Length: 194
Ligand SMILES: Cc1cc2nc3c(=O)[nH]c(=O)nc-3n(C[C@H](O)[C@H](O)[C@H](O)COP(=O)(O)O)c2cc1C
Image (cartoon, rainbow, N blue to C red; front, side, top):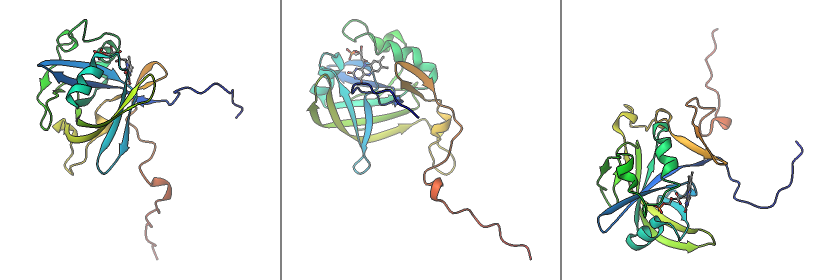
């Protein structure tokens, strides 16, 4: 393959696109974030990079709490809107008639219409440049009960989640290409018929 060389940019694609809720002085806000990632398994930790000019930046910096809501494809219009309008100008929860559920471990509520919510408690804020990275521990996970199968496995493949790639939203195909470790797994011997 021959490549075209471009200057360095944040070109990591695809990434998740999530709805982040926070509450301060009784007001609940939601904004869209794509600069999010898993950064540690034990303790479970995530990062979210937020520009200081966002209302959410102010709210989360002051409370140290937020909830990451993973939206399904039916919420993609709200996902986009919450990423182009500020809670300073419009009540985004009210506009999309989103149902709030109280947090279990933290004060930030989750969005009932999203099948998965991660309650996060901020441990550190790293000013990086345009964005400041909020490092947070995931203190509680909430999953839509219909997504948990009889073996207690969360069926993310049935959650109809979306991702974001270079300015566009995409659905996730729920047909796996392989599973963790399949490349080194030994094939089960079928047993010989003598
Ligand atoms: C797909 C998408 C991803 C976004 N990702 C981020 C992000 O990771 N960090 C950020 O600061 N802003 C991000 N934004 C922009 C904010 O969501 C947007 O400025 C929003 O209006 C802020 O709302 P607030 O002022 O109510 O907090 C994104 C917007 C879109 C549409």
